[in-house]
Length: 402
Ligand SMILES: Nc1ncnc2c1ncn2[C@@H]1O[C@H](COP(=O)(O)OP(=O)(O)O)[C@@H](O)[C@H]1O
Ligand SMILES: [Mg+2]
Image (cartoon, rainbow, N blue to C red; front, top):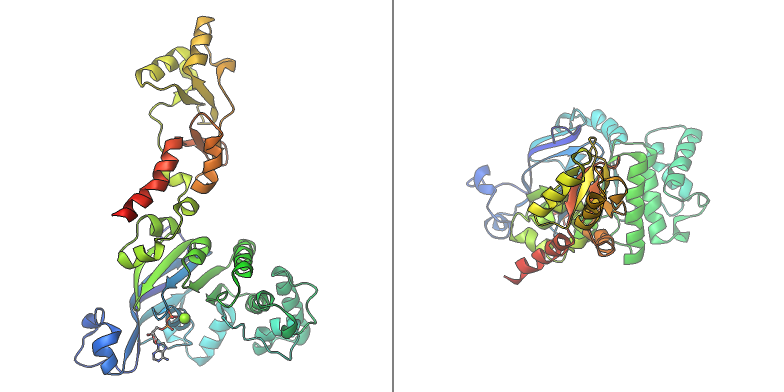
């Protein structure tokens, strides 16, 4: 996190609905379940000692089963719910210390919430609905309609300005909700299960659009969901909540390949590793990597002594030049050549560190060599042997068998 510009910092945050029993210390509260002792005393610990940092521009997902405290967490961030204990810093503001006026300013400019049921006004047009947040802020009509118009265009609703919400599909209504939040130009968008009311096809489409939207507007998004696939698809990092506690925070890859406990394991067991594991995670430093200046003779020697048929050849700048094979090297040397020259096979399957296993499959099956992982400048980063792709896929299934 240190290299990231941090926008949200939550430290030891608690929310206890009702009165905490006096005979249970905060330390004991961490492990006292909601369903026994606490319930009897009429209190619920919805957040238990939650700490996390969120970086500026992150797509941060909070995931967990129903009742795990997700909504409470996202709501305490803008104090729609008053936390019981702990600290919240958002973009430099100590949220807990804000007075009424300060809190209003904070919600206007720093963090804006998109609700699950859109909360659209049925007798106002799409444009007026999108401008509603700005109206509350007291912005002049002409200015707010202009800003709302731009926000509607951003979410793909140009042409729908004068319609009423009732004329729109669920997905479009949710877009109006997003446009309303965007119009106020907040630093952070908070979204509490915004797509859960939509049917699966529309939902997938909305997810795609939201990823694109974030890429365009570069906002920090904090997104709540109980759906693993949604979390994996959207999140740059995912915080997994259970009974008010955070049990794991990590990238989708980390969560799927290295679940912190049985709860997370249960959550991710249906996740397809092919969609999550990337080339960067499984690539290897090749046991033989040839440099152009070493020439064909050394190359052949290195290949033979490591019992390899072929290896990548790179330049001083680590640019990938091609593949040298034993057969081609034999031929060059027989003809008295001292350079790789045309003997290199330049038809190399390449991918980047972000390429998923799923995308790698067709690449790997179309080449008789290893796949080269390169950066955006074509510099060599690592090797993926076709077998490694299959290994990475089956590893997961093996684990499930035991
Ligand atoms: N206003 C409230 N009063 C009492 N208990 C509440 C209140 N709001 C939420 N809870 C309880 O807090 C826990 C977490 O709820 P919530 O944050 O809504 O979970 P999630 O959004 O993950 O489904 C649940 O046990 C819920 O019943
Ligand atoms: Mg909820």
